[in-house]
Image (cartoon, rainbow over all chains, first blue to last red; front, top):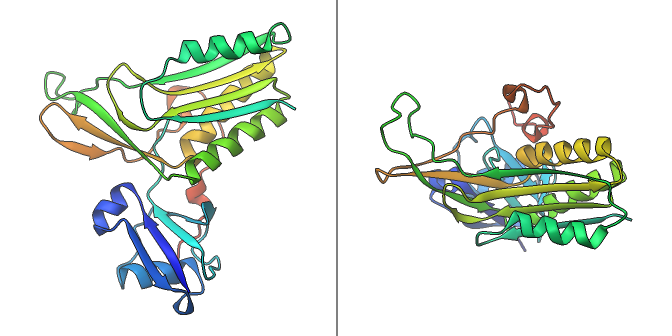
Length: 77
Length: 172
């Protein structure tokens, strides 16, 4: 009964955290997942997020078994 | 239905071999091929110090699973929107040396307008939507994350780019 959390690139280094797991009962939205995983720390101004590997928003719902990714603006190509 | 193929390459790839294979597979139906090839530059760490430390490698991080999904979505959408014969995206991951290809985007169509438009649409979407992150490594041992991609407008062409950051709805 949990939500998997993944951090990438500069955010992963900033938080010194690659993966986390939070109890599903404690979170209803992507924003809740952020605070459960990293505490009181405010998210950086430019933050992208995904639920089950699809772009999502801060207030989007999450459910048991979901994977939530947080990462900075992308710089591929 | 057009073939929309994507691939992540953990080692250097030959873009010309990729294109030759595509071209010969689709001949003689194909009449116009547009490609974008992005390669790693040996930039100076500080443009004001051209004799200072230079880039020795790019390290490309990605989000396994999501990156492939986004590239596939981008290629499939462009192929359908422009009635392509084939769309192809190949992107490096891992450590890339100056001079090596980073990304190949190819659009094969019957006519040039569709090929050009689809190629541009795919590379612009990739730049702002595909989860890749570049870290620059320099000859003095320092390294830094690339902050954000430059809008195409800065290269002299106004392209309305979809910026996912605009729709993520952060609080405040």
